[in-house]
Length: 495
Image 1 (cartoon, one colour):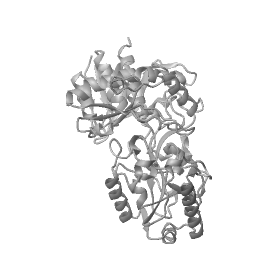
Image 2: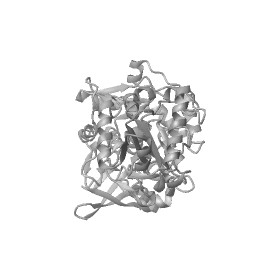
Image 3: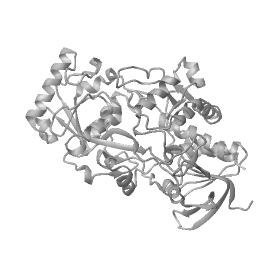
Image 4: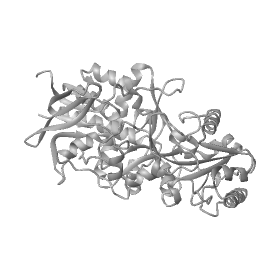
């Protein structure tokens, strides 16, 4: 085997790629991992979904996997490959347990299984799938570098600042990759005897691909929080005849505050810097369109918020609240990263500090009266007053007679100071990708496996459709890590 020849080449070193590298190396394969950045440890997600883990058993959590998979299938209106859903649910625990035993515990960390995610309304069924990476102090633990270290310990090699340009094929079999160094532009070829695994993520930072594959996403999202997601891995596979999902899927946070007067056709910020980050956008506050009118039940999954905005002028919404709201966020009982206090992003004071920062930056408006707030938000004064008055009346009566929001989520907005934010979507990742089978083999346009080509994570498709089911907390991370592990194992076993 020459210096540029490997058994398995993994393209991308984040959640799917790191786990793929570990799994292939565990099977004895000579593994090369290439990534266009110079590190990826910060990209590993802190919340991971699974069913039947050691941590869940310790916490006494039981999840009916049949109910869960039927929920996921119904959520996607069956626009998914159910075999992939079942492949995930039946392999997620082994993946998460491996991560905890082999990566986290040797570094003094562990998984905490969240027991309180389950509550039921028609729109808000939720499942306690969330595992948070933490330590005995209940701190967030960033573990990505440990995954990379584990892969190296198992024998995998890493080449950073190395971008996939094309796949190499011989007689229809994928045999290697053509790469370019992102710093020097040096082009190299590497041979893969057993397989290439595409773990390059989605395409959210590539506006041309967004316009082609997800045009509405360019309107309802004002931020792309994954600047590395250029779709290059998917494009390379399409060049050799791969099949990809025909409809978009995406994970969006309703947390993208923008300056008043923003035109979404001209505002699409690609950054790691969390510009305009508005965590409270994921809370079921009073939310209005740009005419100051309430248009729906705010108690819904993150992305539903932004889906609703696509049927309103400007593709944006306006959130309204007051000081009392910020002192009583726990009453909303939000889940996942919208949860108040650990393992959510903020406690009460931290959230207030962020709001104060956004006010200084011009993303959030503060006023002593509703009339003043309407002027600052460029909303019709009478419409905003009428919406707030009617909302307060329903809060006093304890019943949302307009749209049916749960009673416990009705918090009045009576006394100042008053706050408002115009906001759109934050695109975390696109989730439509290359079609794969349950062996993680990439398929061609007639459904046949392309020999020695695999995909996992957000570069792979068939698992999500439309909106991300955020009431199954940690699912995108688990999908990436579980299928990455399976892809590594499969590729390593090729003859």
